[in-house]
Image 1 (cartoon, helix red, strand yellow):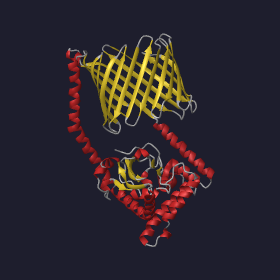
Image 2 (cartoon, rainbow, N blue to C red):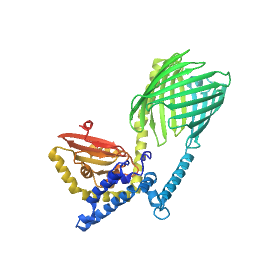
Image 3 (tube, rainbow, N blue to C red):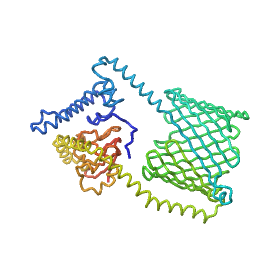
Image 4 (tube, rainbow, N blue to C red):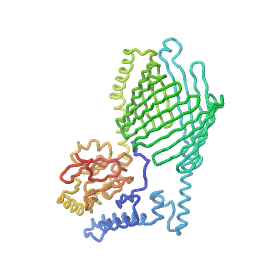
Length: 540
């Protein structure tokens, strides 16, 4: 599994100086002086220690030289070391600050154009309705089919166009429609959208959205049917209820007027939503709950009830590759008993609902759920899981072989850097022990998968195969005199002095055990997450 590419990049120099990416010039100078004092070669007499100090002192100086220069820091934040080393050719062709700014803007525009070219996002779905009762009656298994496709293109920084179409066939009847939507960002708080479609749903419409406060958004739309001239007016208000939840009210006035109230909540491991809708000729309520068992699998339960629906849906899905997810759902309702299979890959979806029975027979419904569920778990346990474990193990082995030399060098450099931190780290640790302050007793950094089995590790082996490095010493060094430790958000921890990346390409975490005021604590954070200790929530 590859490490996620999204999120802050080009922050290794900030990690090296142990400062935030938003650090001021004074904070950069202060951090540089502290690290330079630790690694200055003149402090060491032994030849080996002097060589280690010189190597790390040069890294500190390079980081300070780049981050203390306003222009270089801007370039580094956008393009990283590649921009510093070659992209802007600093010092020869670009001697004036104005020239540097001009070239930086040119490269930014070039990068923006590349992003625009990449902003061509196709999406689509294929729906194949199958009917087992129809097949048994001799009428063929295919009940109907529908296809939909859309291409969205960002034509400029503030303008987006999407073109789509759909086609549906049900028995001997069928039809289709084509649509075009133009979206424009009017300002930082408002946008407008024009739409038109022809075919089964021929209409023209306009919709505008505005952020009326930090937590609230309002949308107003107007659509006119080209078939009968009817007009539909809609209003939606959305409000942020918390960091993970928001609610909305939707009002529609037209041939089929209605009002709907809903809410959505999305957390790292679970999500849920619900809605109640009242219309001039109908009413309905729906809810769903999804639980993510891991980064690859999830379970789902949903229910719909109303004047036209009575349905319960149970199922789940699994991520089978970086871009693909497969789902299997079981539905019981007034329309019958269904199995539904879904394959999602990128923006494309294949959906195959299979009607098993038009009648709600309890025995048949139970069997239709139990038999495939049991078969799924048997296949997962004895076929699917062994296959993926074998494939992941093979990929990990190939990646390890490829990065063997790189990891060995990085481990050796980290070990040398820790040698020069040892005396100060031990003194800090002793002072904290005397006062009952913060002492890091164990800290491991490396592969997320390997850290799951950390309780089985008696000690961390100093070799490539372990995919973990012991960073207890450098964390004790970073503990402040006030008995606190902070690692900044958005900075890969592998760049911290005394750390290294023991498993390139793999998602990483940092696990820390520490004592404070006579109590034991533990915490585990992802590579780019902030770490601040001590905290009461970490208490064991």
